[in-house]
Each structure stands twice: as C-alpha cells, then as structure tokens.
Image (tube, rainbow, N blue to C red; front, side, top):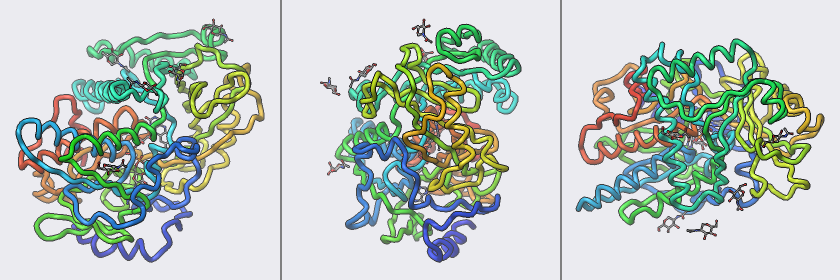
Length: 494
Ligand SMILES: Cc1cc2nc3c(=O)[nH]c(=O)nc-3n(C[C@H](O)[C@H](O)[C@H](O)COP(=O)(O)OP(=O)(O)OC[C@H]3O[C@@H](n4cnc5c(N)ncnc54)[C@H](O)[C@@H]3O)c2cc1C
Ligand SMILES: *[C@@H]1O[C@H](CO)[C@@H](O)[C@H](O)[C@H]1NC(C)=O
Ligand SMILES: *[C@@H]1O[C@H](CO)[C@@H](O)[C@H](O)[C@H]1NC(C)=O
Ligand SMILES: *[C@@H]1O[C@H](CO)[C@@H](O)[C@H](O)[C@H]1NC(C)=O
Ligand SMILES: *[C@@H]1O[C@H](CO)[C@@H](O)[C@H](O)[C@H]1NC(C)=O
Ligand SMILES: *[C@@H]1O[C@H](CO)[C@@H](O)[C@H](O)[C@H]1NC(C)=O
C-alpha cells in the first residue's frame, strides 16, 4: 500500500515547497523532512581538505540503472557498498563471474548526515544497560547485541590497521572513561557490570576509580569507570571505506551522486524500482535505505514514536586552557555529555603549548520540551544547549579549561532514535505487512535508528543487509548470521 502512497503523494508533497523550508517542528506522526540544504558547519566535514568526496558525482549524467541503489552516504550506506564489494569478490573467487553495479545517492555533501556531524566516539558497550536489555530481549539476545559492538569495533580497527589508515583517520585507542554522576548511577552501573559478567559476557578490561582518584589523576570530582574504546575521524573512515569498496574488484562497480536527494520510490514492472530525483530517475532491483533519521521521509511507516525519531544533537570544539596530561588522552562520557581531546599532531594542531582541541557534545536534555526530538533542521543551533556545552568543561575540569572560552566551531546533526534503543535492520515491511514482505522479497531494505550510538553498530548492521541483498541476487534464502541479534530484524519489531 505504501508503494502507491509514495508514488502518488510524495513527489508533489516534496516538490511543492523549497527543500530547506522545514523550520517548524513537525507533529509526531508526520514523516521526516529531507535533510535541509544548508546545514551548520561541522569540524569533521568543514575542516579544509577533510571531505575528499564532498561533491562527487553532483554534476554530469546521473546513473540510470543499477542492481543496487543505496540511499545515504553515511557509515551505513558506505558499509553496505563495501560489504557488497567484498561479497562479489568472495563469490567470484569460487569460480563464478557475477557482476554487480551499485549506486550511492546522497542528498547533500558526501557523508553529511550524522556520521559527518557526530562525536567521533567508537565506544563498544560491553555491560552498559545490561539488565534492562536482558529484561526486554532475554539473555542470549542481549549478549549478541553487546558482542556485536565489540565485533564491529574490532572489524573497523582491523581495516584501519590493514590499510595503514591510522593517521589518515586519526584513530586513537585511548579507552573510554565514564564519569559517574550520582551514587544511584554508580550502583546501577556496577549492578549491570556484575550481571553481564554473570551472564558470561567478556566485558574486557574494566577499571573503577574513586572520586579522589579521578580528581588527582584527571582533575574532575566524580568517580569513574574506564574500559577499552577508540575515537577517530568518522567521515574520513567512511571516505576510505568508499574508496576501498570502489577498488575492491572489477566485478563490482560503484557510482556516487552527491547533492541528489531521492524524493520518491515507485514500483516498475518486473519487481524493480524507480527512484525519483530532481536530476532524473534511477532504476534498480534492490534498494537499501541508509537514511537513518530521515528514513520516514520515503517510508512513512517509520513515522512517529514507534518508528525512527529524528533527534537533534549539538557539538562544539573547545581549546583546553592548559597542556594536555597524557592520562587525559582518552574518550570521555557521563553527566549527559561526551568529549575527547583531538590528537595533538592532528590536522587541527598548531595550538600554543600543546593545548588540544576538545570535541564535546550532549546537553540535549535541557534543549526544550521535547529534548530536541522530532527535529530535522541541522541548519540551526539550540541556544540553551549551546550555553550548557560552553560551560560544561570549565565546570567539570576547572583546572584545565578557562571559563568563558568560546568554541572554535559549533554545529548540529540529526540522530535516529527508536522506542527500544535498537536499530531496525532488514527488509522494509509495509503497514500492514503483505506476504511478499514476510518472505523478505520486497526488494527494499533498511538499517537505521542507532540512538546516537551508531559507530559500534552501523557497520555490522549494514553488513547484515548486504548479506540479504546478496542472497536475493543469488536467488538464495537469507539465514541470520550467528552473530546477529534477531531482535534488530524488522520482522520481529512490529
Ligand atoms: C551530534 C551527534 C553526535 C553523535 N555522536 C556519536 C558518537 O560519538 N558515537 C557514536 O557511536 N554515534 C554518535 N552519533 C550517532 C552516529 O553518528 C549515527 O548513529 C551514525 O552516524 C548513523 O549512520 P548512518 O549512515 O545510518 O546515518 P547518517 O550518517 O545520518 O547518513 C544518512 C545519510 O542519508 C542521507 N539522506 C537522507 N535522506 C535522503 C534521501 N531521501 N535521499 C538521499 N540521501 C538521503 C543524509 O543526507 C545522510 O548523509 C552521533 C550523532 C549526532 C547527530
Ligand atoms: C573485544 O573483545 C576481545 C575479546 O574478548 C577483547 O580482547 C577486546 O579488548 C575487545 N575490544 C574492545 C574494544 O572492547
Ligand atoms: C603508512 O602510511 C604512512 C603515512 O601515513 C607512510 O609513511 C608509510 O610508509 C605507510 N606504510 C605502509 C606499510 O604502507
Ligand atoms: C597527570 O598524569 C599523571 C599520570 O600520568 C598523574 O599522576 C598526575 O597526577 C596528572 N596530573 C594532573 C591531573 O594534573
Ligand atoms: C572508482 O573507481 C573507478 C574505476 O576504477 C574510477 O574511475 C573512479 O575514479 C573511482 N572513484 C573514486 C571516487 O575514486
Ligand atoms: C600522532 O601521535 C600519536 C600518539 O600521540 C601517534 O600514535 C601517531 O602516529 C602520530 N601521528 C603522526 C602523523 O605523527
């Protein structure tokens, strides 16, 4: 049914107003807007020279036909392309000559959604929220979902190391330190930790610090817990992953069209799809929705609280007032914020006396009555959240940051939240479902809704979707990989 709706309603609804005219928050059940055309400038994308593929394929002829259309060029879309390329390579190494053509369609600059506007943390959780996740999904599922975060992180780090990209993407393996704001939170975290261990999860190296220890070593008056994690330059990683996908094998061809929003999807005869853009249409057999917060624009069944809730987050970069203490070279979280110092030799170096640039986000809870939910406009800043961000580091680390120091950059980005905090992964299911949906034959797939925690999940969720597409390409049934949590699957979520 949604196919008809999309074909009939969407093009006129979208074309009848300018693309960036979405200043008013929409009501809860309304689909998301397209990404606005004039977003705030983010450190990751707008540092000169950072976004190599920014405007790739934005002019010239549009690809007319492909096997797979991927909508969105963030971590999810590009990981899907990368895993399709890997799959084609593997299949052909077993004496076959499959050829696959994919195209990535991106509304704005390359990677300019959440992946290019985020906090830069690659923080796999191994016990956080363990008990509530277990109550909701049961032990074996929660173990899979937490192990997926470790699996994703290790796979991404392996690619970075294998292709000598550590400096290119500024990978820092400094661990993650989480400040603990209250005794209740301390009790809850330690209970999650013990429950996870009892369930047999390998929680890795975890170290607990008292308030006095944190104060003397790090300069903040809170207890903390430290575990292994990374930070990096997400859009540079995605750029490199795109280039790897593009050069994997001559049997996989990949096109990229930036500044090309998909505004409609209509069925064609013989189970194919026509994707409408302002530059013409692209025909394809399989469609991957990697549109995250914006998913409901093309798939209205993801509107509202039970779908994917676009949620605006805000970030700043702030210079520290003092030289960095080596022990501070970690990623940090807690107190409703997340931050880390950029490497001193990174492309933003050059500050006097080794004062690092700190990337900080959070404070959404004070952003107004809806906590910045149902907002898709990342062309504006929230003033209240900004005030909170400007004051946070001087308040928390009074010996390291100067009060009143203004940020070097400040920007927003749109995350995709879900009711259960789990992403939706799998064939797109109509509302109500049809038989072909339940047989996974719809030809459209989605991986989206990472609740502000996509770096340790999106890469693997897209890998699962690429597996579904490859199964369909080969006319085989898709079987759930043993590492994949089945409660992420679209068929188990409605
Ligand atoms: C401020 C902020 C801070 C965050 N911090 C962290 C963090 O530190 N660690 C972490 O793990 N996660 C963090 N996240 C979340 C993380 O960035 C996301 O989970 C992740 O980037 C999602 O990747 P994605 O590819 O699915 O979505 P996106 O990167 O948002 O990509 C979706 C793409 O689709 C494009 N698009 C949408 N609709 C259309 C259309 N109709 N046609 C064509 N293109 C379209 C968009 O322009 C966009 O480029 C943060 C997010 C934000 C916003
Ligand atoms: C992932 O798990 C392995 C094995 O349990 C462990 O050695 C490693 O430290 C974990 N990695 C992260 C980033 O947690
Ligand atoms: C890795 O990259 C660095 C530059 O970033 C270069 O100097 C070095 O030679 C590279 N090493 C290999 C093995 O490619
Ligand atoms: C800096 O780090 C060292 C450990 O590396 C620690 O002993 C020292 O107290 C720290 N100094 C601060 C917070 O000023
Ligand atoms: C992708 O690969 C093709 C074929 O090798 C090449 O012509 C093209 O320049 C590559 N694209 C990018 C962005 O590097
Ligand atoms: C930057 O410094 C880090 C450690 O501080 C090091 O691992 C990395 O190799 C350095 N990069 C360059 C380009 O020198």
